[in-house]
Image (cartoon, rainbow, N blue to C red):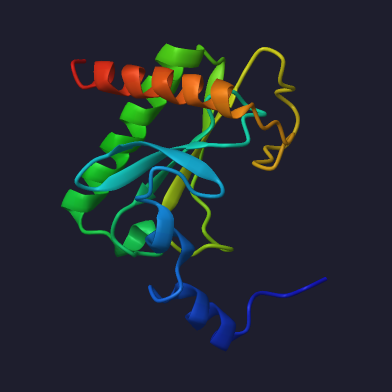
Length: 158
């Protein structure tokens, strides 16, 4: 069994320099996801692996590694954007439940995975963000993105 990262490796991973999320969370597309929306606090992204239809990730725009590092205003804004994303997913995909996962031990940049659980998912199975994978065609993914962006904008009016 492997232990935690060495002190040097953990410090290296926590730096803004070389952070993959800082480098590409704002881009329209990256290797893992497509940009749904950007707020003053976060980037909302639709994950390419749609084994759980509607799977999104909300990424803090500032390079912080833990919720405990946020001031009250930023914490409130972060969770408000996570909630709006959850409402967006619910409106577009009607899942049975959305799991909200804040981890960051591999990529120490604060982000929250929103993993919808649908009626075809086993509620007793442990959550795995690597399920599938199921990569829709580029055209299907573009259609899904357009629908999520429309639902995101509609949530601003709620």
